[in-house]
Amino acid sequence: MKHCSRRAFLKSFGIAAGALVLTRAGAYAQAPTLTIGVLYGSKLPLGLGILNGAQLAGDELRYRVIPADLDNEGDPARVRSALSALAGQGAQAIVGAARSETVAALLPELPRLKVPVLITGTPVGGTDQVAANYANLKYLFRVGVVNQAAQIFDGGQFAGEFLSALLKSGKLPGKGEVALTGDAPSGDFRNALMARLNRVGLSVIGNLSDPQPAALLERLQRIGVSAAVTVFFDAAYGAAFTTAWSQNKVKIGLFGWNEALLSGDLGGAATGYLLADFAAESPKVGARTAEFYSNYSKRFGARPAYTAATTYDALYALSDAARRAGTTDGERLVTALEGIRLNGVVGLIRFYSIEEQNRDPLKLAVAHDQVYGLNRAGGAPAFDGVRPFYVQLRAGGQRVALYPSEYAVGSYELPPHFS
Image (cartoon, rainbow, N blue to C red; front, side):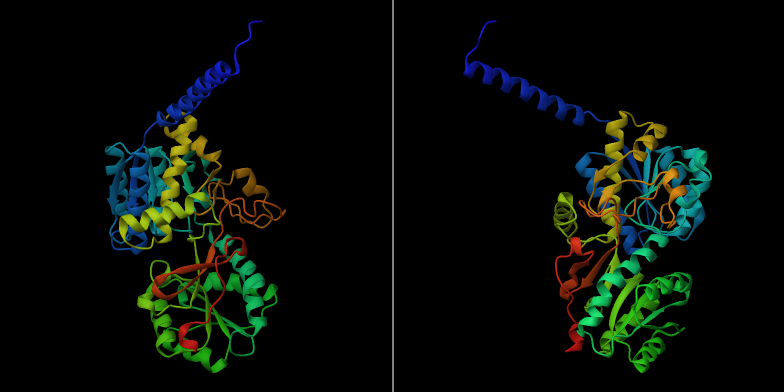
């Protein structure tokens, strides 16, 4: 065997290794490009987040992005018309939908469209029907937003691990008692959450609601609770309640779900509120998280609503699926999405299978929903999917992740009007 010098060997090895790197990079660059339709409502802050997230990812991936404005997403006929227009313009996948009404309107159209549709804004509806009608609805997925059953379960985890410890610390005024409270549309959610709160040992003295936000706040003050776990699905109601809480310097800690705060802080009135959200600017989530928040703020000059992050993840999920499938064919993209495992801005992107739904004793798994990431087995990584983040609103609209603890970047601070 003829021997070569060490220099010649290293030179030839370097050429071969470089060729391998170039081949891989070339293969990725040659992955099929996609045309993405975007369902968003220009009258909704969460809708604008959908559009911005899609445009940011689309530019990075060099995809053609076709916006379809649904105004406030309240007109089913407009949804159907938009879907037809997107199909006519060659959309090979569709992302968006901030309201459950939009999802309901698009379901009958899926068998005709035959392209993946990724919900990125609402936790309600659609995917709950995939398992029973897979042939027609297999195209539907939900990215980044866990369903309400998972939210309620996670709310119990938050209450038992974070809120309970905070109340026992004596940091909040009062005797450590809690009231669950909300508006009329949140009644079913609150009833289910009430059972979870009682199970984790909180001293919950009521499940309160009132047609008037100010009256509800007065009832909480008369009772004298330390904290209120709030569930406000009516944005206007929640905004009025939160503004009155701040202006009247009510010394009750607020923790929970508030539609009005998912895209803003009410001009600072919500400072100190601890909110359940679906995205958080925590570098502990993953490498892509910090980059997304930085790029988004530079381009749009604002903090992204959670829908911007989930929609951004949806486009990268489609890109990964197209690369692995080697095609833009809708059927094969669906199969590739079902097998995805990709680190995104808000957590690990992986979808439940029908088999996982059928065997889940907790009934949290819904086929084609992104996996709820509570790792019951322990160990690392802590999460194998996504979870709601609990972020405290701070001065200037900053949102500081406090829970889950693995993602926390700060600790609880009393609202400024407490002092």
